[in-house]
Length: 313
Ligand SMILES: Nc1ncnc2c1ncn2[C@@H]1O[C@H](COP(=O)(O)OP(=O)(O)O)[C@@H](O)[C@H]1O
Ligand SMILES: [Mg+2]
Image (cartoon, rainbow, N blue to C red; front, side):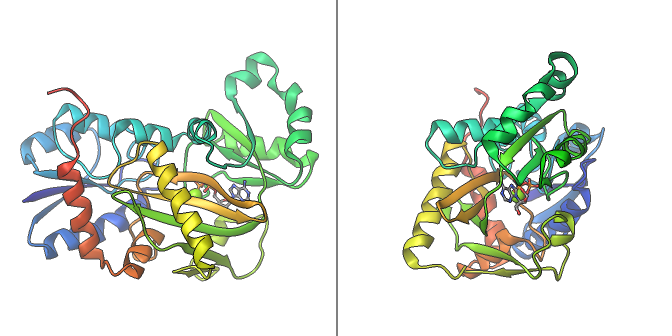
């Protein structure tokens, strides 16, 4: 079988993608298949036409690769690809749209308010900030609707910090959300073919409340899998993750990020193409379930080949 591994691209998560892809290419080769890495760019369609792969492994993260764009091209080329389909990718990449779907399906997600840049520029949206702040309370979290890896995610401890946080978020995306801060344990649940993997907990070594990006540097956070939770809580969190995956229409695999607060788990977001590097949470969870990385790649390839295409034949 020939597997083209899509990697790189122009998103801010390019570096993570290259690391995910290197590992995937090794696993594809270890499975006895032919692996062809493709750094995606202008010539993508031509290269794919020439290569004629049996399946395409999408190891791209962030806008462009994870938001349905590449998936749509692959549908047109009638090439099977890994991970969720076009619609699910588009939903997961837009935190606001995803939260609306969750709310409609009674999946608990922190309360929020969203704006796009036009609302600010042309409709005086800034005049509603006071109501929003009152409703959500402080601290609150400001984030761009798209992006990942905590890029552009900021806390505002009080009213005076909101404008700067909004500006930062708007520098990443035209759409931002303000979200109620949930205090609790940070969990991530990988879902493989609709089945939840063991729960991962991210435990920051020092409570560095304001600097998120630093929090994710190697060595500043400990990851525990399976998370130390009572069985009943584990089941509840896993069920919530699988129902979120289904609600957003995911297939293949995805990772659900949650916070377990005093009032129960709250879903923050779903990553349609979670990181697959050697420090990433999804492979760690698979490992805890007894699925090594090569076995994981095999499962993902199989489900890609079994998923029906979205476009009519
Ligand atoms: N509402 C919230 N309450 C508390 N912490 C949050 C909240 N939203 C985000 N965070 C923190 O920011 C991190 C990144 O937010 P997330 O919504 O998962 O976006 P990203 O796509 O950048 O991963 C989370 O893992 C969590 O640590
Ligand atoms: Mg996240």
